[in-house]
Image (cartoon, rainbow, N blue to C red; front, top):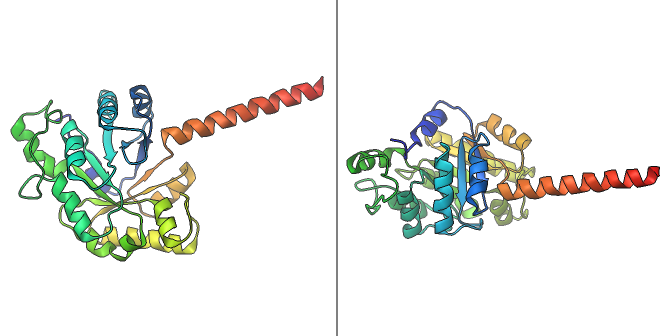
Length: 265
């Protein structure tokens, strides 16, 4: 089945193989194609803080899947209709923000899994394009990846109960919101001892519970550090961050060169 291709990601994580996740904020399909061809193991379409609506998410999903990319989506909230629509469109991994309790985690799992594992409504309109109806239903519960974001003090306190949720595949750390909740402000590549202890605890609880763990990072060095620490996957800077950072660096370098040239005259 071509449209559900998450199983090889789960297999890699189970084998403790590390993967890199790209992050798509832009609603432009061409940007999505560029990301799909950059070598990421997965690419996540961000409907929470990105500029996507459902239509742009589907267009970018189509663009990336045409190049063989494994596509996840971060949903804007733990709401059954958008989760179901994205899965029906062919997304194979769901990342849900602000999951603070076992009840929140169960609500997410129920939205992602067909009965008897959950309560997902049947209608995989685009997701079953490359498979028969029966084949999709048989494999979807096994192969769709369901991840909760741990990004508040409450979630850290409840992480054991969250991880124990049947049907949940893993956790994903949002360092900025977690930093805000713990009183340290926003930021990605955290160095505060309390933040590092919280990150380590989330990772340890996830693996002890047989679940996978990922983290959002601000750069390659910190991502490598987190993967070496034991995380199964790490997200590198988004398309928007890379474009802005690179553009600013190029403009700054050009202006510096112009200034040097002017001083030599």
